[in-house]
Figure 1 (spheres, rainbow, N blue to C red):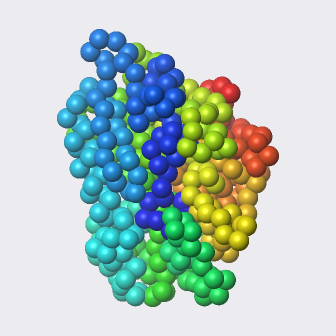
Figure 2: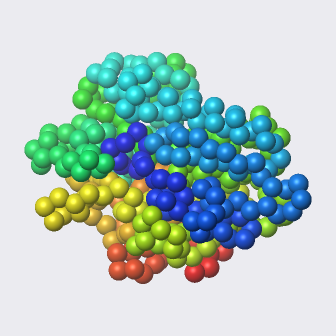
Amino acid sequence: MNSPSSFPSRRALLAGAGIALAGSLTCLLPGCSESGGSVAVGPGEEPASGGTFAFDTYCTFSVYGDDAALSKLTQACARYDKLFNLYSSDSDIARINAAKGAAVEVDPATADLVSQALAYCAEFDGLFDITIGAVSTLWDFDEGVRPSDDAISAALPHVGWRGVHVDEDACTVQLDDPQAQLDLGGIAKGYVADRLVELLEAETSATAAMISLGGNIALFGTKPDREPWLVGVRDPNDPGGSTVVGTASLAEPTSLVTSGLYERTFEQDGVTYWHILDPNTGMPVSTDVDSVTVACPSSTLADTLSTTLFVAGSDRGRQIADERDDVAAYFILHDGTAVESSRWDVITSFAS
């Protein structure tokens, strides 16, 4: 998400995230666990649950079949947090930004992430731009700081994804513009979620799992009772609450990401500012959307699209979603109505 944070603060489920995972009883209330309500499905079939703080949010894991997988997931989160944290001076991203245009040797995962991000920047024609950092770092949505118009105007010429170059063989990243700044907050958690699913497949005996990186949810495998995963889409007009507008039933493992204007906002001089920035203006995006939920197999793509569709608005956003056979999107608009992309009910079996 285009936000002045290394990883946007989509706080724990039902306490700031737009989506919440439920167990077989669709437990979406505050009395459920912070992971969204994992529920035992029978003797010996209760998942192991754990969590860690990373990416500026609380991450939770519910894993069936391998209790030891929890520590591996936690260690992996710590590794990726260290690599991708925009505001940690020794992270790969911070070192790239500080290099003033010189090529920087990075971890292979960083090179891979930047390469995938650039492909999406191109595909979505700049609606998503990982060089938004030149502007996003000027804003502070936690402290309520709005940069001056002059500061935004001075930073905008340094926003341009075409000036980023990756050599995946040499594992280097280089910025043409010495004043450009990467901000991978709109894709990094999705990328990490995909890597955690790969870790479960390759290095554990887990049979099913829910991974929640502060609202970016990735589902792996089939639950022991073979019931679908149930995910509640939260009402954006009830920030921090437990009200949902509907429940998605997912028979196949997939990923869901919700972005909402309510996540990080502040008011100044009677104007409300939200954290999703338009790469063309450097200002909070002008949109008809209050929240958008994206469902697709790739968490990396779902994370990217959750921002892209917001910037695009509901009409163009639905068109973008419909251009892919495996993507579905659900938009809640300013007027309280909801619209869906053509495959939403097919992919999610959504019930309001």
